[in-house]
Image (cartoon, helix red, strand yellow):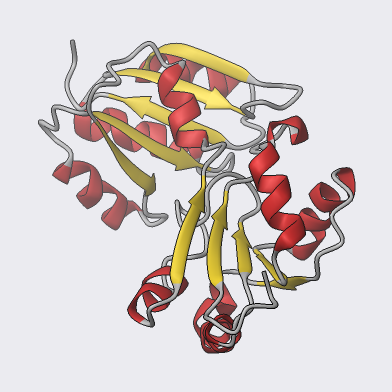
Amino acid sequence: MGESSAAGTLYLVATPIGNLGDLTARAVEVLRAVDLIAAEDTRHAKILLARYEIPTPVESFYDAVERAKTPELLRRLAGGESVALVSDAGTPGVADPGGHLIPQAIAAGISVVAIPGPCAAIAALTVSGLPMERFVFEGYLPMKPGPRRRRLETLKGEPRTIVCYETPHRLMKSLAAIQEVLGDVPMSVARELTKQFEEVRRGTVAEHLAHFEQHPPRGEFVLVFHSTIT
């Protein structure tokens, strides 16, 4: 891929969200063929690359450095090199680095190609038991109480199923805020998807609050819920 005199390609490669066996055959092929892998965490990426014996060079590319490193990546792409963007888990740009680089590459006339695969939001939605025909992804709810409440206020009356990510140390605050603003709505809470301690709980917000008060939250969470009580 790096031998062409034409501009290279930016590949958005979805990586496993837990189980390393979920990397697709096409993703392996692309990761081996590109000139560089831009990874959210090089240490995390190298574990995956070692599993599949992929020798491609890796460079760090996380939120705090994305804007600073984007011009150099664009220069390399314009010069004919191809780059694979990977996040720690799942699909790049979906609550992960890539939101600045991708539109900049498109604006520069660089070919941007998706290599689809694992996505925690979609995986959690499919096992939630809630309607999947229409949904909205909210990423992470704001950390501070005021902005978090205001975000939830905008979701009142939302007819689509709502999906968001949450961390263990913020889970209880987010659940309490959802209950306060939206009520005791139906919700699925998915934890550690595809990993050894995967768990999917279904019920109401109050039931989840009661459970995690007795069982301190651990791992990464995906919340799937409605904005109205049904």
